[in-house]
Image (tube, rainbow over all chains, first blue to last red; front, side):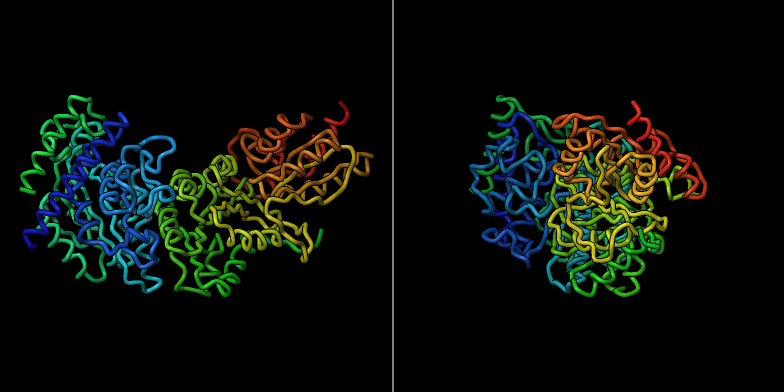
Length: 280
Length: 312
């Protein structure tokens, strides 16, 4: 990947982290941890990977994205706003009753959201249905969906995984945000879904393992995913929950709580410093 | 009533096959019960547009949602127990909340499943489905109505739950009958009271009304095929005109048609409402007709309920 492109992606992901955090801070609720772990993946998808048109969110030939881990909505909203789906100012209304930005994604309220999600395990099935629809209609567009690693504990995920492989849905790419933490502890302590890659392989998927914060690796993985035929692809992205903010990283307490003013200011200072470093 | 006896699930399968010829965007899904739910009739005619999710109802509903989100007309089927029951939250969150126009074709509803017993006799589905905002809930009385309901549901832009039975039931509607979604059908006029029935209990209501007539009780019969949205006007008119309502459904008396009618009437036109249905019990294994009698889902129970109410 060209260095300038990589720098732009890094800057975009940092801006998305800033915006997501601001929304959660203003709302005094929301899920920063998983938004931050997924920020690089979401930035990559919307700024580099997917064939989309923010001026025409319902464009029929667009690639689809389903945020199966719907609680990372602040991260998704931030990336959608930065990509031009709606004004960045709207992000300040996160979680307000009359806002287009509800606590979890709603496909009718937010331009760019392709499926309403929030109840874990359900988004992947919808993504599978979309990919099946594309196959039936011989459509060239692809479907992407982001799952949490704790979400893999939902039985429906494996119902969907079995079905997608049985139908040979090679137009579907699942990304697992493997940040290793869920509300009650580490995913291994609570109810281990490991080994994740082996499980998807056993279900008949093509699996690629990457560092979910490395744009070179993401670029390679998504390029590879497009070359696979007759099998759906699962990218297991190793990530850090709370990525980018020192006191949130790998801290389970930041799954679903908002920073206070002091914490928010420190987080902003850290992200702005990182942004300055990237942009020079 | 005509001599024809057909299960509503048979009409469902036939209607899907008919629709398949008209609508090239029609997709039908099942969860390993295609022979029983009769989606197999469609599968045979249009194998490329039929998908079996296997024994995985949660994913069945989710995949149907995804297909709907990209422009297909979808019917997804299983037994009522596993569609409305097991996949309740998927129907609520993946269809109801995003208002995706998937039609759940739930067969083998109620106690008339028969020998399979309580684990398969779903008497809670109407209650579950009608609490979901924006959900349409249809429970056809016979094959004519079932066919018409399938065609109407296919045109709906919002999710719909269609409730079909396993048992062959008498035809109560004429073949030229015009089905109107959300409109109750007066099958018999009467002045003393009104029996408000749905599904296979409509035929029982007509038989009860005939028996009561010979005893000098004039009972009207109202067929409510669309439980949600409820035809409030028709129910309130019946309450105002006859002053006594007896509901009849092959469903729990908790949360179904009886509840819907009582909720409405108690707010807008108070009158006595008695409910015939499954009285907070699980079923048993046995022949369908025997089970219907055992749980009081027959003309005799309806008539007796009316007699007691009228004599008071």
